Image (tube, rainbow, N blue to C red):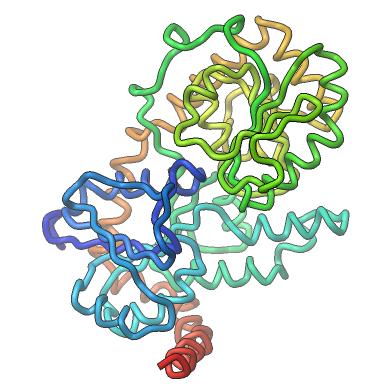
Length: 411
Protein backbone atom coordinates (compact mmCIF):
# COMPACT_ATOMS: atom_id res chain seq x y z
CA UNK A 1 0.00 0.00 0.00
CA UNK A 2 1.31 3.43 -0.92
CA UNK A 3 1.93 5.92 1.85
CA UNK A 4 0.38 9.36 1.60
CA UNK A 5 3.69 10.87 0.53
CA UNK A 6 3.96 8.37 -2.35
CA UNK A 7 0.49 8.75 -3.87
CA UNK A 8 0.26 10.96 -6.97
CA UNK A 9 -3.16 12.20 -8.07
CA UNK A 10 -4.21 13.38 -11.52
CA UNK A 11 -7.56 15.11 -12.01
CA UNK A 12 -8.80 15.43 -15.59
CA UNK A 13 -11.33 18.19 -16.19
CA UNK A 14 -12.76 20.07 -19.12
CA UNK A 15 -11.84 23.37 -17.50
CA UNK A 16 -9.94 24.71 -14.55
CA UNK A 17 -12.31 24.86 -11.52
CA UNK A 18 -14.57 27.93 -11.52
CA UNK A 19 -16.09 28.05 -8.02
CA UNK A 20 -17.53 31.51 -8.60
CA UNK A 21 -19.37 30.30 -11.71
CA UNK A 22 -20.90 27.00 -10.68
CA UNK A 23 -21.59 24.66 -7.80
CA UNK A 24 -19.72 21.97 -9.74
CA UNK A 25 -16.55 24.07 -9.52
CA UNK A 26 -17.06 24.44 -5.77
CA UNK A 27 -17.66 20.72 -5.33
CA UNK A 28 -14.57 19.74 -7.30
CA UNK A 29 -12.41 21.86 -4.99
CA UNK A 30 -14.11 20.23 -1.98
CA UNK A 31 -13.26 16.81 -3.42
CA UNK A 32 -9.63 17.88 -3.84
CA UNK A 33 -9.57 19.03 -0.21
CA UNK A 34 -10.72 15.55 0.83
CA UNK A 35 -7.80 14.10 -1.13
CA UNK A 36 -5.19 16.34 0.49
CA UNK A 37 -4.55 14.05 3.52
CA UNK A 38 -3.89 11.18 1.09
CA UNK A 39 -1.37 12.79 -1.22
CA UNK A 40 1.33 15.41 -1.45
CA UNK A 41 0.95 15.83 -5.21
CA UNK A 42 -2.19 16.85 -7.11
CA UNK A 43 -2.14 17.79 -10.79
CA UNK A 44 -5.19 19.10 -12.64
CA UNK A 45 -5.13 18.44 -16.35
CA UNK A 46 -7.62 20.68 -18.14
CA UNK A 47 -8.63 20.87 -21.80
CA UNK A 48 -10.01 24.43 -22.04
CA UNK A 49 -8.23 27.75 -21.69
CA UNK A 50 -8.27 29.40 -18.27
CA UNK A 51 -10.28 32.59 -17.89
CA UNK A 52 -10.77 35.29 -15.29
CA UNK A 53 -13.14 33.06 -13.30
CA UNK A 54 -10.64 30.20 -13.00
CA UNK A 55 -9.60 29.33 -9.48
CA UNK A 56 -6.07 30.01 -8.32
CA UNK A 57 -4.74 27.76 -5.57
CA UNK A 58 -1.77 28.87 -3.46
CA UNK A 59 -0.56 25.42 -2.47
CA UNK A 60 2.67 23.81 -3.63
CA UNK A 61 0.96 20.41 -3.86
CA UNK A 62 -1.48 21.71 -6.46
CA UNK A 63 -0.27 21.99 -10.07
CA UNK A 64 -1.83 22.54 -13.48
CA UNK A 65 -1.26 20.87 -16.83
CA UNK A 66 -2.92 21.89 -20.08
CA UNK A 67 -3.90 18.75 -22.01
CA UNK A 68 -5.23 18.25 -25.51
CA UNK A 69 -7.94 16.00 -26.88
CA UNK A 70 -7.04 13.31 -29.40
CA UNK A 71 -3.34 13.98 -28.97
CA UNK A 72 -0.53 11.58 -28.07
CA UNK A 73 1.11 14.35 -26.01
CA UNK A 74 -1.28 13.32 -23.21
CA UNK A 75 0.18 9.79 -23.27
CA UNK A 76 3.70 11.19 -22.90
CA UNK A 77 2.62 13.37 -19.96
CA UNK A 78 0.70 10.50 -18.35
CA UNK A 79 3.64 8.09 -18.51
CA UNK A 80 6.03 10.77 -17.22
CA UNK A 81 3.86 11.79 -14.24
CA UNK A 82 2.70 8.20 -13.54
CA UNK A 83 -0.21 8.95 -11.17
CA UNK A 84 -1.48 6.26 -8.84
CA UNK A 85 -5.03 7.68 -9.00
CA UNK A 86 -6.75 9.36 -11.95
CA UNK A 87 -10.00 11.25 -11.35
CA UNK A 88 -12.24 12.04 -14.32
CA UNK A 89 -14.42 15.10 -13.67
CA UNK A 90 -17.63 13.93 -15.39
CA UNK A 91 -18.11 10.92 -17.60
CA UNK A 92 -17.21 12.66 -20.87
CA UNK A 93 -13.62 13.00 -19.65
CA UNK A 94 -13.56 9.27 -18.88
CA UNK A 95 -14.78 8.53 -22.41
CA UNK A 96 -12.04 10.73 -23.87
CA UNK A 97 -9.10 9.72 -21.69
CA UNK A 98 -10.07 6.53 -19.83
CA UNK A 99 -8.80 4.17 -22.51
CA UNK A 100 -5.46 5.99 -22.60
CA UNK A 101 -5.06 5.60 -18.83
CA UNK A 102 -5.92 1.89 -19.02
CA UNK A 103 -3.55 1.35 -21.91
CA UNK A 104 -0.52 3.16 -20.54
CA UNK A 105 -1.05 2.90 -16.75
CA UNK A 106 -3.24 -0.16 -16.16
CA UNK A 107 -2.37 -0.24 -12.45
CA UNK A 108 -3.69 3.30 -11.84
CA UNK A 109 -6.97 3.54 -9.95
CA UNK A 110 -9.69 5.24 -12.03
CA UNK A 111 -12.30 7.38 -10.26
CA UNK A 112 -15.29 9.09 -11.84
CA UNK A 113 -16.46 12.31 -10.20
CA UNK A 114 -19.98 12.46 -11.60
CA UNK A 115 -20.89 15.89 -10.10
CA UNK A 116 -24.45 14.79 -10.82
CA UNK A 117 -26.03 12.13 -12.99
CA UNK A 118 -26.19 13.79 -16.39
CA UNK A 119 -28.51 11.06 -17.65
CA UNK A 120 -31.05 11.90 -14.96
CA UNK A 121 -31.01 15.56 -15.95
CA UNK A 122 -31.19 14.67 -19.65
CA UNK A 123 -34.19 12.36 -19.26
CA UNK A 124 -35.99 14.95 -17.13
CA UNK A 125 -35.47 17.64 -19.73
CA UNK A 126 -36.88 15.44 -22.49
CA UNK A 127 -39.74 14.33 -20.23
CA UNK A 128 -40.65 17.98 -19.59
CA UNK A 129 -40.78 18.64 -23.33
CA UNK A 130 -42.89 15.54 -23.99
CA UNK A 131 -45.07 15.96 -20.88
CA UNK A 132 -44.32 12.46 -19.57
CA UNK A 133 -42.64 11.19 -16.41
CA UNK A 134 -38.86 10.95 -16.58
CA UNK A 135 -38.87 7.38 -15.25
CA UNK A 136 -40.45 6.31 -18.53
CA UNK A 137 -37.39 7.55 -20.43
CA UNK A 138 -34.32 7.17 -18.26
CA UNK A 139 -33.57 3.50 -18.92
CA UNK A 140 -33.26 4.23 -22.65
CA UNK A 141 -31.70 7.71 -22.38
CA UNK A 142 -28.47 7.69 -24.38
CA UNK A 143 -26.67 9.97 -21.91
CA UNK A 144 -27.70 7.75 -19.00
CA UNK A 145 -26.43 4.64 -20.77
CA UNK A 146 -23.09 6.28 -21.55
CA UNK A 147 -22.77 7.44 -17.97
CA UNK A 148 -23.56 4.00 -16.56
CA UNK A 149 -20.94 2.49 -18.85
CA UNK A 150 -18.41 4.99 -17.54
CA UNK A 151 -19.32 4.15 -13.93
CA UNK A 152 -18.71 0.45 -14.62
CA UNK A 153 -15.39 1.12 -16.36
CA UNK A 154 -14.10 3.04 -13.34
CA UNK A 155 -12.99 1.53 -10.05
CA UNK A 156 -15.03 3.99 -7.99
CA UNK A 157 -17.51 6.80 -8.69
CA UNK A 158 -18.32 9.78 -6.47
CA UNK A 159 -22.07 10.40 -6.24
CA UNK A 160 -23.23 13.75 -4.89
CA UNK A 161 -26.85 12.97 -3.98
CA UNK A 162 -28.51 10.27 -1.90
CA UNK A 163 -31.34 10.24 -4.43
CA UNK A 164 -28.87 9.36 -7.17
CA UNK A 165 -27.34 6.67 -4.98
CA UNK A 166 -30.76 5.04 -4.77
CA UNK A 167 -31.27 5.42 -8.51
CA UNK A 168 -28.04 3.54 -9.21
CA UNK A 169 -29.20 0.77 -6.91
CA UNK A 170 -32.41 0.52 -8.94
CA UNK A 171 -30.19 -0.01 -11.99
CA UNK A 172 -28.46 -2.82 -10.04
CA UNK A 173 -25.10 -1.07 -10.03
CA UNK A 174 -23.07 -2.72 -7.22
CA UNK A 175 -22.60 -0.43 -4.22
CA UNK A 176 -18.88 -1.26 -4.15
CA UNK A 177 -18.53 0.82 -7.34
CA UNK A 178 -19.77 4.13 -5.93
CA UNK A 179 -19.29 6.38 -2.92
CA UNK A 180 -21.42 9.21 -1.49
CA UNK A 181 -19.54 12.53 -1.66
CA UNK A 182 -21.97 15.46 -1.23
CA UNK A 183 -21.05 19.10 -0.67
CA UNK A 184 -18.51 19.11 2.16
CA UNK A 185 -18.54 22.43 3.98
CA UNK A 186 -16.57 23.81 6.90
CA UNK A 187 -19.62 24.80 8.94
CA UNK A 188 -17.45 26.21 11.72
CA UNK A 189 -16.29 28.88 9.28
CA UNK A 190 -19.86 29.67 8.20
CA UNK A 191 -21.74 32.57 9.79
CA UNK A 192 -24.46 31.98 12.37
CA UNK A 193 -27.75 33.74 13.02
CA UNK A 194 -26.10 36.28 15.35
CA UNK A 195 -23.53 37.49 12.81
CA UNK A 196 -25.67 37.95 9.71
CA UNK A 197 -28.37 40.46 8.75
CA UNK A 198 -31.78 39.92 10.33
CA UNK A 199 -35.14 39.56 8.59
CA UNK A 200 -35.78 43.32 8.82
CA UNK A 201 -32.37 44.17 7.37
CA UNK A 202 -32.97 42.18 4.19
CA UNK A 203 -34.98 42.83 1.07
CA UNK A 204 -35.64 41.41 -2.38
CA UNK A 205 -35.67 37.99 -3.98
CA UNK A 206 -32.55 36.47 -5.48
CA UNK A 207 -31.72 33.87 -8.12
CA UNK A 208 -28.15 32.73 -8.73
CA UNK A 209 -27.10 30.35 -11.48
CA UNK A 210 -24.64 29.61 -14.26
CA UNK A 211 -26.52 30.35 -17.49
CA UNK A 212 -24.56 27.86 -19.54
CA UNK A 213 -26.57 25.34 -17.50
CA UNK A 214 -29.90 24.77 -19.26
CA UNK A 215 -31.95 24.04 -16.11
CA UNK A 216 -31.12 27.54 -14.84
CA UNK A 217 -32.14 29.20 -18.11
CA UNK A 218 -35.42 27.29 -18.13
CA UNK A 219 -36.09 27.98 -14.44
CA UNK A 220 -35.68 31.74 -14.52
CA UNK A 221 -37.54 32.04 -17.81
CA UNK A 222 -40.50 30.10 -16.43
CA UNK A 223 -40.42 32.02 -13.15
CA UNK A 224 -40.31 35.51 -14.66
CA UNK A 225 -43.12 34.75 -17.11
CA UNK A 226 -45.47 32.69 -14.95
CA UNK A 227 -44.76 33.23 -11.24
CA UNK A 228 -43.26 36.67 -10.84
CA UNK A 229 -46.32 38.75 -11.91
CA UNK A 230 -48.45 37.23 -9.12
CA UNK A 231 -45.77 37.79 -6.48
CA UNK A 232 -45.24 41.36 -7.62
CA UNK A 233 -48.93 42.08 -7.35
CA UNK A 234 -49.00 40.83 -3.76
CA UNK A 235 -45.85 42.56 -2.45
CA UNK A 236 -45.63 46.20 -3.44
CA UNK A 237 -42.22 47.39 -4.65
CA UNK A 238 -40.53 43.99 -4.47
CA UNK A 239 -37.57 43.29 -6.75
CA UNK A 240 -36.02 40.05 -7.99
CA UNK A 241 -32.25 40.18 -8.51
CA UNK A 242 -30.65 37.68 -10.89
CA UNK A 243 -26.94 36.89 -10.73
CA UNK A 244 -24.84 34.40 -12.63
CA UNK A 245 -21.94 33.76 -14.95
CA UNK A 246 -22.57 33.69 -18.67
CA UNK A 247 -25.83 35.63 -18.45
CA UNK A 248 -27.52 36.36 -21.79
CA UNK A 249 -25.90 39.46 -23.28
CA UNK A 250 -29.20 41.28 -23.69
CA UNK A 251 -30.02 40.73 -20.01
CA UNK A 252 -26.85 41.97 -18.34
CA UNK A 253 -27.32 44.91 -15.98
CA UNK A 254 -30.89 45.54 -17.10
CA UNK A 255 -34.06 46.10 -15.12
CA UNK A 256 -37.67 45.66 -16.17
CA UNK A 257 -40.88 45.06 -14.21
CA UNK A 258 -38.95 44.61 -10.98
CA UNK A 259 -36.54 42.04 -12.48
CA UNK A 260 -32.91 43.19 -12.19
CA UNK A 261 -30.14 41.31 -14.04
CA UNK A 262 -26.63 41.75 -12.66
CA UNK A 263 -24.51 39.17 -14.48
CA UNK A 264 -21.49 37.50 -12.90
CA UNK A 265 -19.92 38.61 -9.62
CA UNK A 266 -16.68 37.54 -7.94
CA UNK A 267 -18.34 36.75 -4.61
CA UNK A 268 -22.01 36.27 -3.79
CA UNK A 269 -21.81 36.05 0.03
CA UNK A 270 -22.67 39.70 0.63
CA UNK A 271 -25.41 39.59 -1.99
CA UNK A 272 -26.96 36.45 -0.50
CA UNK A 273 -26.74 37.74 3.06
CA UNK A 274 -28.70 40.87 2.08
CA UNK A 275 -31.53 39.13 0.21
CA UNK A 276 -34.70 38.00 1.97
CA UNK A 277 -35.69 34.90 -0.06
CA UNK A 278 -33.69 32.70 -2.42
CA UNK A 279 -35.41 31.16 -5.45
CA UNK A 280 -34.84 27.70 -6.92
CA UNK A 281 -37.73 27.17 -9.38
CA UNK A 282 -36.07 24.30 -11.26
CA UNK A 283 -38.28 22.20 -13.53
CA UNK A 284 -35.57 19.66 -14.35
CA UNK A 285 -32.08 18.91 -13.13
CA UNK A 286 -29.99 16.52 -11.04
CA UNK A 287 -27.50 16.45 -8.19
CA UNK A 288 -27.40 18.86 -5.26
CA UNK A 289 -28.22 22.52 -5.83
CA UNK A 290 -25.33 24.73 -4.83
CA UNK A 291 -27.55 27.82 -4.84
CA UNK A 292 -29.64 26.32 -2.02
CA UNK A 293 -26.61 25.24 0.05
CA UNK A 294 -24.98 28.65 -0.38
CA UNK A 295 -28.18 30.34 0.75
CA UNK A 296 -28.30 28.18 3.88
CA UNK A 297 -24.69 29.10 4.63
CA UNK A 298 -25.72 32.76 4.68
CA UNK A 299 -28.89 32.23 6.70
CA UNK A 300 -31.12 32.81 3.68
CA UNK A 301 -34.28 30.66 3.37
CA UNK A 302 -35.14 29.33 -0.08
CA UNK A 303 -38.32 28.45 -1.89
CA UNK A 304 -37.69 25.52 -4.21
CA UNK A 305 -39.28 22.81 -6.28
CA UNK A 306 -39.02 19.16 -5.28
CA UNK A 307 -36.31 18.67 -7.91
CA UNK A 308 -34.29 21.55 -6.45
CA UNK A 309 -34.68 20.06 -2.97
CA UNK A 310 -33.61 16.57 -3.99
CA UNK A 311 -30.94 15.11 -1.73
CA UNK A 312 -30.80 18.10 0.64
CA UNK A 313 -33.25 17.60 3.48
CA UNK A 314 -32.93 13.95 4.47
CA UNK A 315 -35.04 13.53 7.63
CA UNK A 316 -35.28 17.28 8.22
CA UNK A 317 -38.58 19.11 7.73
CA UNK A 318 -38.90 20.48 4.20
CA UNK A 319 -42.40 21.97 4.52
CA UNK A 320 -41.21 25.55 5.04
CA UNK A 321 -39.20 25.68 1.82
CA UNK A 322 -40.29 22.99 -0.68
CA UNK A 323 -43.32 23.71 -2.86
CA UNK A 324 -45.75 21.01 -3.99
CA UNK A 325 -46.87 22.94 -7.08
CA UNK A 326 -46.51 26.37 -8.66
CA UNK A 327 -49.38 27.98 -6.75
CA UNK A 328 -47.83 26.69 -3.55
CA UNK A 329 -44.45 28.05 -4.71
CA UNK A 330 -45.96 31.53 -5.05
CA UNK A 331 -47.68 31.35 -1.66
CA UNK A 332 -44.47 30.20 0.04
CA UNK A 333 -42.46 33.09 -1.39
CA UNK A 334 -45.04 35.58 -0.12
CA UNK A 335 -45.21 33.90 3.32
CA UNK A 336 -41.44 33.79 3.82
CA UNK A 337 -41.09 37.35 2.59
CA UNK A 338 -43.77 38.78 4.89
CA UNK A 339 -43.83 36.56 7.99
CA UNK A 340 -40.73 36.77 10.21
CA UNK A 341 -41.65 33.72 12.30
CA UNK A 342 -41.73 31.47 9.23
CA UNK A 343 -38.54 33.03 7.90
CA UNK A 344 -36.57 32.40 11.11
CA UNK A 345 -37.92 28.85 11.39
CA UNK A 346 -36.75 28.11 7.84
CA UNK A 347 -33.36 29.69 8.55
CA UNK A 348 -32.94 27.45 11.60
CA UNK A 349 -33.71 24.33 9.56
CA UNK A 350 -31.08 25.39 7.04
CA UNK A 351 -28.37 25.75 9.70
CA UNK A 352 -29.25 22.32 11.14
CA UNK A 353 -29.04 20.71 7.69
CA UNK A 354 -25.59 22.16 7.08
CA UNK A 355 -24.25 20.96 10.44
CA UNK A 356 -25.71 17.47 10.32
CA UNK A 357 -25.68 16.61 6.61
CA UNK A 358 -22.95 18.60 4.84
CA UNK A 359 -20.17 19.29 7.33
CA UNK A 360 -16.85 18.14 5.89
CA UNK A 361 -15.85 16.39 9.12
CA UNK A 362 -18.65 13.86 8.58
CA UNK A 363 -17.16 12.57 5.34
CA UNK A 364 -13.39 13.08 5.54
CA UNK A 365 -12.49 9.80 7.27
CA UNK A 366 -14.89 7.56 5.34
CA UNK A 367 -13.72 9.15 2.07
CA UNK A 368 -10.09 8.39 2.88
CA UNK A 369 -10.88 4.84 3.99
CA UNK A 370 -12.93 4.08 0.88
CA UNK A 371 -10.36 5.38 -1.58
CA UNK A 372 -7.38 3.73 0.13
CA UNK A 373 -9.20 0.41 0.54
CA UNK A 374 -9.98 0.19 -3.18
CA UNK A 375 -6.50 1.37 -4.13
CA UNK A 376 -4.90 -1.22 -1.86
CA UNK A 377 -7.03 -4.06 -3.24
CA UNK A 378 -7.37 -2.94 -6.83
CA UNK A 379 -6.77 -6.25 -8.56
CA UNK A 380 -9.31 -8.09 -6.40
CA UNK A 381 -11.77 -5.21 -6.76
CA UNK A 382 -11.55 -5.32 -10.56
CA UNK A 383 -12.01 -9.07 -10.73
CA UNK A 384 -15.46 -8.61 -9.21
CA UNK A 385 -16.39 -6.03 -11.87
CA UNK A 386 -16.82 -8.26 -14.93
CA UNK A 387 -19.27 -5.80 -16.53
CA UNK A 388 -16.65 -3.08 -16.37
CA UNK A 389 -14.05 -5.33 -17.97
CA UNK A 390 -16.44 -6.22 -20.80
CA UNK A 391 -17.34 -2.57 -21.42
CA UNK A 392 -13.70 -1.57 -21.46
CA UNK A 393 -12.73 -4.43 -23.77
CA UNK A 394 -15.57 -4.08 -26.28
CA UNK A 395 -17.44 -0.85 -25.65
CA UNK A 396 -14.61 1.68 -25.61
CA UNK A 397 -12.71 0.52 -28.67
CA UNK A 398 -14.74 2.78 -30.96
CA UNK A 399 -13.78 5.80 -28.84
CA UNK A 400 -10.14 4.77 -28.91
CA UNK A 401 -9.92 4.34 -32.67
CA UNK A 402 -11.96 7.46 -33.40
CA UNK A 403 -9.48 9.41 -31.27
CA UNK A 404 -6.56 7.84 -33.11
CA UNK A 405 -8.16 8.67 -36.47
CA UNK A 406 -8.66 12.31 -35.44
CA UNK A 407 -5.10 12.43 -34.15
CA UNK A 408 -3.74 11.08 -37.43
CA UNK A 409 -5.95 13.47 -39.41
CA UNK A 410 -4.66 16.45 -37.41
CA UNK A 411 -0.99 15.48 -37.68
